[in-house]
Length: 336
Ligand code: NAI
Image (cartoon, rainbow, N blue to C red):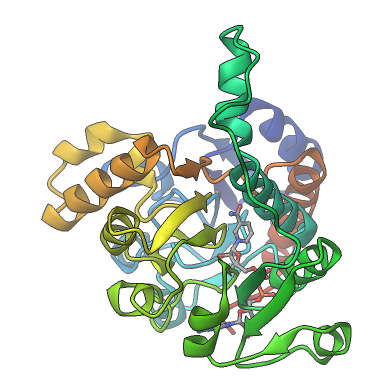
């Protein structure tokens, strides 16, 4: 384990202190607050292990260039930002944080839903301006409405329980239904049935080749007019342009979104001028800006995971993952 190098990207000062506390003496630690991109690969060139959040470029192209890399400890559940095939080919072990607090993301999903249904954001904006009037702020009730949950894993299950508690009818689609939810009254249906029945649709599936643009023009056309869309999973599950079109023609009435496709570009827009981005990236960025400006849409900046309790869990699991990699006894491995 001596002499190994761990390179951390996207870690804030307070996080660096915790990592140093648990890991100093076990490896050489280098910390960067910025993300890893094609333009600063040099900073990781000697790394045995890389730790980052999801905005770092750990694509096949990057992994191909980092010759000495043995392990990645991502500070996330999702691993869609990592070139898992190239990692497999190069024998790079990838560890994630499997569950740091599914309730945190479920609670954020419910927060978006209630904020939309009760017009919380425009209400508060109005009172901040000193205007104490409720005209034009009429909301709508959740009780009696139907929510369609796509993906009833850890997060989707908690959203199902919460919305049952709010007296909603809950229908769901998942290739692996959860019998516990069925006992509680959740009805598993096909995706087209879910689109047909739901007043609110919420996504809780991982982003993978088979789920990219899971919701596009064809799916929006099957939905009830006036549906509300929630996405706290991954931006690319929804075709952003198709969502804008669905808002414009009234299929979608409101949307609550914590994740946008290619959201890294929103953090560093100067990257637009890099040769690594093509025309598709510009179109996605324009669509993202249109969604962020739309009054019917609430966008939060991939903040659903961001509670004090979750951050603590993420760091402690990542420390354990790094120690496992250093000791050649990895845990939470996603690619073996
Ligand atoms: P999980 O692995 O417990 O559940 C995923 C569920 O999706 C499984 O039940 C699986 O059978 C189902 N599924 C897979 N493909 C499907 C498909 N095509 N249609 C319907 N269901 C499908 O994952 P968990 O913990 O519930 O997280 C879900 C996603 O939430 C993660 O993959 C991640 O991308 C996202 N997430 C977002 C965060 C945020 O801060 N916004 C934080 C944490 C996770």
